[in-house]
Image (cartoon, rainbow, N blue to C red):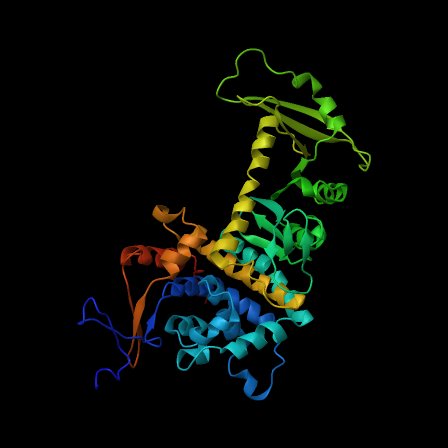
Length: 446
């Protein structure tokens, strides 16, 4: 009876084994400490917290805005996308260390504290505006340490399925279900420059200027070569004119029509003979002006003949690039990486989990997911060694973030005794060394 009253669980296949749960002393997310080190190097969460306004008074301020923000971001990075997860996370030793401040010695934010932070504090108009500007500002902070010579912006929309009567959700005929329809803008490194949550029934390019213009404004005074890519949903003369006025080169897919087909009619005759296994590819460039355009623009056509197919595959791209046709098509095709980055956000961070009723609450959630995504992506491209450079964000979460550790406290130190299964000590050490090399060197004067 004495042993039966203890918390340890017993297993029948081996009665010598006991299972004990020590949530305060053991963590499954010790890898978050590497992300926190990177955060400290660039001062990312500090930069956000300094701009947020805190309207709490009295005992409601047990945790600072900075601490709550870190818990929101790091929780999502570790795969805890809901504020209800704070019930366990608030005592997790890894989460308490990355949150810092009061959480180190006591607990991190509770479910109610995190809920109020995300739905009351961050939803204030001024705070929401600050939050929506942060992904781009984080990117700028990284570029200050790692300068670039060109910027390529990829814009795309996606779906976020909804369930129940969530404000702003609507049936979308393209996706075939009820959803939100967020818009994303990435750069060539996979960093998320800006994102916007929109109603489910809007067109793919709706409100494009709210997403594109802030990024264009940030890069306007920098000495960079600027590019933009988008699919056929962004074949809008207003976008062309905007990009041309801002000195951007662009490649945007164009929807086919009879006039465009007429321009390549001489290339639509099927090649004679048995088709080879390798597709026959032809290109053609011509000037075209749609009825809504104020000036003719260059259009590049690609015609592919595949074995076993009666008709060719045809694509049109409107562009102001002066490259040869094959290079324009090759450049445009790299736009597909933006779709891959959106999938990473869905599967690794679950940023389609927008389950609040109020639209503005879900807008906040999407922005928090965006910050978590950028923190993970920056670590991937700047701190991962060559041997694991191709890890996806999902792999990073499962192998790097999810490192088990036992926590031992001494008077002067807190020691994380980390498991060495998927990530060895030498590999983790190399990641930390790469992060440390990003820290600015302070030069003493006088």
